[in-house]
Amino acid sequence: MPSDTVIASAAAAPPGPVRAFWNAFSENRGAVIGLFAVLLICVVAALAPLLAPHDPLEQVKGATKLPPFWVEGADPRFWLGTDAVGRDMLSRLMFGARISLFIGLSVMVVSMVVGVALGLAAAWYGGLIDVLIIRIMDLIMAIPSLVLAILIIAMIGPSLSNTIIAVTIVYLPRYVRLVRASALAELSKDYVTAAKVAGVGPFRLMTVTVLPNCLAPLIVQAALGVSDAILEAAGLGFLGLGAQPPTPEWGAMLADTRDLMLSHPWVMALPGLCILLTVMAINLMGDGLRDALDPRLRKS
Figure 1 (cartoon, rainbow, N blue to C red):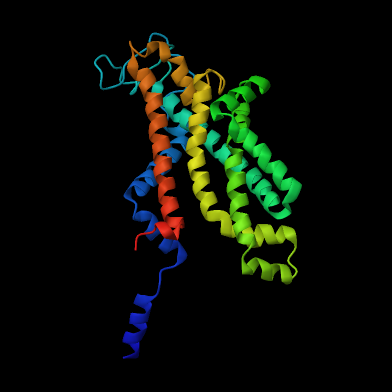
Figure 2 (tube, one colour):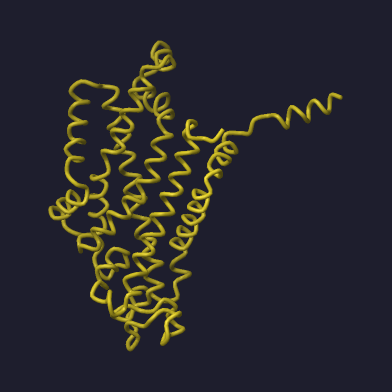
């Protein structure tokens, strides 16, 4: 029957690119869990002004160092207790998610945009420009990331915006070298030669023809770069070189409460747990993106 043939051919039709990507991504259960965890953290961060029960900077008199709800002596007004000066921990953690995600996303976007531009330029022009760009990137990578970030902050001063600048410089070489290597591999292929023969200009050739074929590893690196930036910013905040008090940034919250680590451990444990869960969720999601975007890693 013709109708049976149509149904059979429709059933045998390969899935679309979005469906195929999701099928490959969802094979990794950890990646799916990480994705939903990241989405939950993003929703909490975006709706922090509505969800937070208190002002994160408000110091409630007579409510200092209150324990969370599972500890005897907790105050029902403060589910996760308060810090040394009476600020609600739950509210500060929610607003801290906004700051940490903002830092991670800002560093990723700026590093990727600048890295793509420099990587494509190095691959296309070659020669002295290529050597100059790569040697500068090698110089940046030769210095331990935290040490370099501290050095940059020492020169430009500690603040949230300067933290983003410092961490962006630290992670820029990853994107430059990745894009350059991918672009060099693509430039030797026939479709690029055909585009050159057709008269495609250098800018259009690199951005429209070559760059889309370099996006798969770049997307994976961008996802993992967010978690690295959050960790780096938290480290700078803990050292007092990142976001400055009373800003509710997770690393700065760890630094503010380190004197209470033994007497009131939850005050320090909660920001650390938020950093751990956020970074773990992003890394799990990044692993799933790598598996889905690289055909060699897909299950047969």
